[in-house]
Length: 209
Image 1 (cartoon, rainbow, N blue to C red):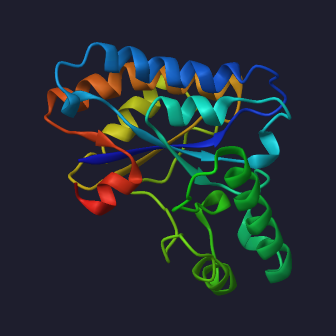
Image 2 (image 1 turned 90 degrees about the vertical axis):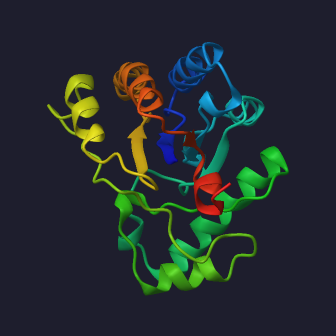
Image 3 (image 1 turned 180 degrees about the horizontal axis):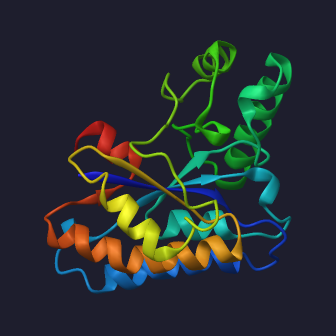
């Protein structure tokens, strides 16, 4: 098994969340061709709550498609640079927004830029329901920078980190990023399936089901 995680969704300032729907549609198209349930892909989408519109229904779509939602804070920023009280307030705010929207338990938090410090870990461990560790990854994502954001490079780069238990991370924080990521998924998901990998949520990978 490998876990597929997608960060920074939904893209900000999109009334229809078209970028995230594109990612979900790409995975759904792959799943429509699945022969058995083991061939179906499920992912963990790390949501930035400040990107959610007042009338957004993208969380409901993520859950309805069988995917998982993770907490990625309220803003696209380096959370390790925040003071302890500010981080704690933002973490709690993002948690509450996601819970209010879906009434579902949350298990994973991924810090902005993948950087963290002791007071962040202390805050995380005080929040019921969360794993007492950060949801990091097996690769350093380069798909938010130019020219390494190109789908051809990202597909090659991500394929270098494929091994049992790997945690892959891609991004959907803008229309451009989502378009590139959708292209990556079309190739990468098919390649992983051909190699016999199950592509699962972070929780399923962690639980080893």
